[in-house]
Amino acid sequence: MTAGFSTLDYIIFGAYAALIITVGLWVSRNKKGKEKTSNDYFLASNSLTWWAVGASLIAANISAEQFIGMSGSGYAIGLGIASYEWMSAITLIIVGKYFLPVFLKAKIYTMPQYIVRRYDNRVRTILAVFWLLVYVFVNLTSVLYLGALAIQSIMGVPLLWGVIGLAAFAAAYSLYGGLSSVAWTDVIQVIFLIGGGLATTYLALNAIPETHGVIQGFKYLIHEAPQKFHMILHKGNPYYMDLPGISVLVGGMWVANLYYWGFNQYIIQRALAAKSKSEAQKGIIFAGFLKILTPLIVVIPGIAAFVLTKDTNLLATLGPAAHQHLPSAQHADYAYPWLLGLLPYGVKGIAFAALAAAIVSSLASMLNSTSTIFTMDIYKQFKKDATERNLVRVGRTTAAIALLIAVAIAPMLQTLDQAFQYIQEYTGMVSPGILAIFLFGLFWKRATSNSALWAAIFTIPVSMFFKFVFPQVPWMNQMGYSFLIISAIIVIISLLEKKTESKAIPVSKELFHTDTAFNVGAVAITAIIATLYIIFW
Image (tube, rainbow, N blue to C red):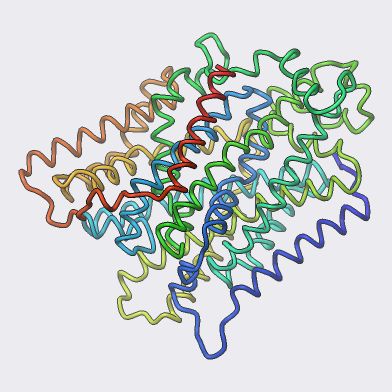
């Protein structure tokens, strides 16, 4: 479906692209007489304010997998998929209060750096390799594929050229500038992302002829598709295997969320680059409020597409463009691109810029974190005398190679239906073990290096065991069971070794003290989430 971009749309999108590249290169320029160091490149010189931290967290998180993948899941499953977003807001509070202070105290660049300080180099290397494989072969490839799918659907650009174009856009400023370029341009990206996303939702709800205005449009969705407005799915629901009932509140989703927000390099790296602990925590609360808003711009459009396409009489009122590349149960990921094709000229350019902002900001974040882990946790181990200039050069080269690999693999994902579920399931192969290793490392002094090593070794085999031996068990529950088994491995081996780990990092009650702004924000977020679940139970 070629959306029919007008000259105005091209001007708007071109201006957005020029702005991002210009700002990215400008903020990362070398100061006169000062060469860029590894701290400058990988941690933005620890200069990020709370609003930059919060904006960058959301820009790194919201990508094509949300706009395209989660809208597709909204089309297929309904509002229940919003649990990933709303439970993430609660998870951010836990991360900000209990995990982040320990990491900031340790003054680390990467998550594997914490592992080597708490355990040993063997565990660090295994986890660093895990992360590199997941970032390159799951995250980068899926974001490129979904983004290119959108470009193909909206503008008629062949998938491969869309992949190459997005990769080139992200590389244009992020490879040179590092985290400074990524984080500060993310502030602009979030404005486009939220603004353009809300515009698309507004126009989608307003496109229903039987209603007048957004509120009535939303009510119409509930009336016409009540099955799409349940947060907790029952066993009879055809998508129960994706969102297994109460497990989204008390089960395996906590494994996914705590791993993602607490120990995932390309997310937590923004908080590590904050000016102070207080700025980092305020940024996390800001991100939590934005997560509450996210389903409005990525899930509701998918439900709107479902309602608009299921009624042939209603579909006929939307014009000829509405009959091209219709989303379906087998092609749910067409939902968001299909909606963009219905937008009026001018608005289409803004909405497409929002989608591009989501894609490019996440690509840039993943590239920077991939290069950070490889450079600081693998290359620097073997080249301990590497200069700052050499570390920055290796970081740039690593990001470029990772991007080329992802570009080569991305077109192979065309056989997927709901790409968002693919990302969650395969990331879930490593998240139970990584979460267990970090949690016991943070809060149990008796957890030993050998126990963490065996937990890392068994992470994928245990996950694969559940996947192939118990395929009838929802994968989210499989993730929870894997976490319990790997936790048991850590506890048993640690107790058998009968010692307190001397490398355990001391924590005190004072370390977890939070200021009034954080506490008020945390209470407000929790109350809002509880209310939403009560309304849409």
